[in-house]
Image (cartoon, rainbow, N blue to C red):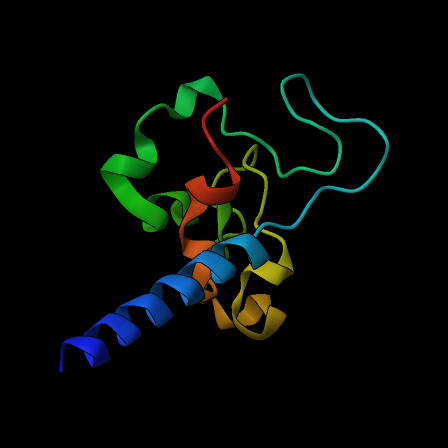
Length: 109
């Protein structure tokens, strides 16, 4: 029984690790904003300090995601790219699994 639990736990950890790594897509182009390396996803601005810990992915989605009322909610917020949504389809309004862990790819700047 212990071996089975250990195997399941190890498998889950592997899936989460690979999912989070696969979830980080890069930016394109040859230049990047200050504090961001070329090819890496953008950092969260300093004004977002602690928001993910307080609100989770739904807090990010509230401004940067698609919904029936607005996309994104705030005119100055960068919308999530299509590859962040289930099946790459923005109209699902459903952020895809590993993409809900925003801080994995978008650490605080």
